[in-house]
Length: 525
Image 1: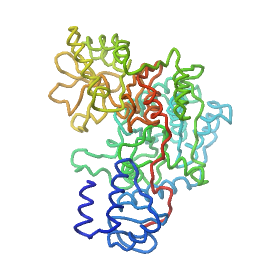
Image 2: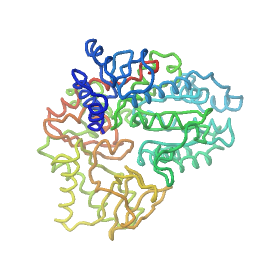
Image 3: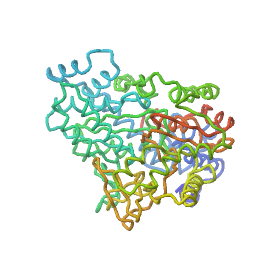
Image 4: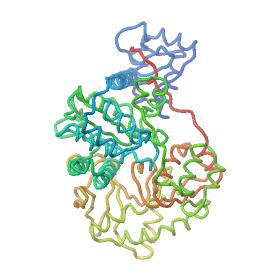
């Protein structure tokens, strides 16, 4: 696509001179996740003279490139999408608060007696405002809080039409499981909403499914603007959403719908260009309307009182490799790359048990016990190399033939989507977890997939397992930065083994410049 745009600008618009290197830099910026390129005054003047460039405040009508008022170079498509995102979120944030009603107010006070409780503040925002932006790290209770918000919203509006969604199948499944578990722990004041909340949880889906992308007869286009039939849409793992997905969701929302957004801006951002969640959190510090809709949860209950994983995650956020080394303890171990075989040996009981599983329910119960995470796809330190090592050892010792598999393409015909994790059973059938139980498909029905003893950290985002082995290539890699390391560490509930040398740790902890976007700029082309 990038090469096609460059070719189009050359052939159709005769882009030349200093403008062409600027376009090449913009294309490189897209590859790094930026949606915009900052350009200096001299280059701005030359770009402004090009017939391929729309200059905000001067020109009308679309052109392939846009020069914004703030001196950013963007594509027309991405600029329009970011402006729509900011305008719709701004309108939702500026909508006046709505009354709760005495019954809801009483239930809220019974559920959260402390008015200073951050989770209570998040629930209040979700009840009162059209937009609620709830951020926080793993273990801070985002989905627990969201479940109580949904229960209170249902108490206020019987028959509330709600939707739970996330960017990937695994994240959507995890969201549904978390909300269902929270439904079993509702306080007495909300116990009557447990059944409806569990029904919501069973319907948790990917954003692509919610928006109708790829459904039969849609041509992949999705829903028309304003046509989502829900009163409240709750989205988890929003840091993974790219500009196109944010734009599609906001355009599809009904005119009176509420949007509750959960996420952690310190985790990995979308694979495609964009940095919407992080930019919104920053903008909330400057925009009073958006700021009044943002609540950050900071109390980590998962790692409370435990030094290892929580301290390691904090060290990464502080860009402090020495503190990361000092965090080693019972639940966090550091090993050099030379001891990778030893690290894999520690996971062998899990591998052996899962490989020998023949019952779908038992196999699915084992799959989330552990995970090997890698920064890279290929090479001896990547997903391909680790998967080959584990499979070869199973063959050498005559181990079982069951193995985890990862779906790598959306397939509406089977209801499986990119990121869904299952277990290939002896004989070839594959089991997936659906509605709390197994769903078994024949091998011929399975869409594109790959073995998943190991997977990239990007693929694991939105999931949670008991134990994680994280493998970084010696010397580090451009892909293995602090967002990746933080995301990987916080996938584990109980234990992390990090296999990396000092150079890789230093590189993975080093602070990076945030992605450049145009979301903070107001105005229109």
